[in-house]
Length: 287
Image 1 (cartoon, rainbow, N blue to C red):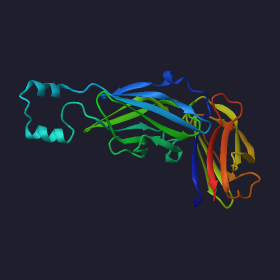
Image 2 (spheres, helix red, strand yellow; image 1 turned 45 degrees about the horizontal axis):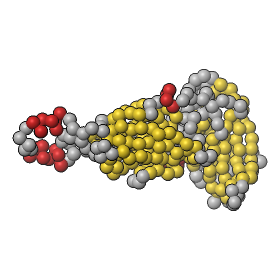
Image 3 (cartoon, rainbow, N blue to C red; image 1 turned 90 degrees about the horizontal axis):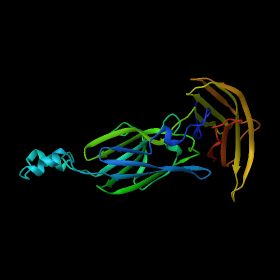
Image 4 (tube, rainbow, N blue to C red; image 1 turned 120 degrees about the vertical axis):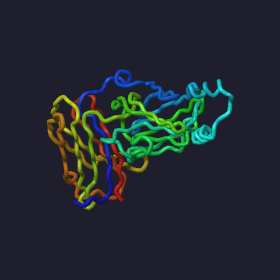
């Protein structure tokens, strides 16, 4: 089937609520000469903002000490190494990344990030990581710079250990353990397959035990000017039994709707009466 219109992605937790961030991940990690601190995540009703601070640690290493003990002169090879950022001593942070769980997070989920330059990086050339990358950072020894990114939806119950990576000079290093957004339970893909029939595609992948049976509630509201919302469709699917590795798909038009008129809308998905699965929402537009 040829897909037209647009595609929107949404992460849904369909099992149990994860434990507190301090039990499932580290709020502070040290990679090379840099300390990365997870400052927390705040949900404002539509989006979740994640904040981190990076501090340049103590500079110097054995090579620098050897140089101080020597005659202070560098060979041609050492000078070339120094120019390329591969010599001894502290090297400022060139760039760094927070990995995102690609099973349920893509570039369409990123609302904002800062300070610039920052962006959604697919397969970073230095580390192979896909996530949020801050470039040209220049965090120096003893300096602290804070960073943030915002994802659409509520991710405060989806925080677990993820990977951070740094590049300083020519040195690249990464470490898994820092707190960040991940996929729990189910990942879900939602998309409009054909605007002419308003056919939608909901795909849940159960990737974590235990087995659970639950109804799935779906709702579409129109976002009116002035901030109002009007429900245009609301229906229940299931109950659906999810076991480890279960894939459940809904591929059909919106019940009772032949075609959505042009406008701004929001799709919400949640389970009925399940702890740990808060309502997840995604805005979209029909032109």
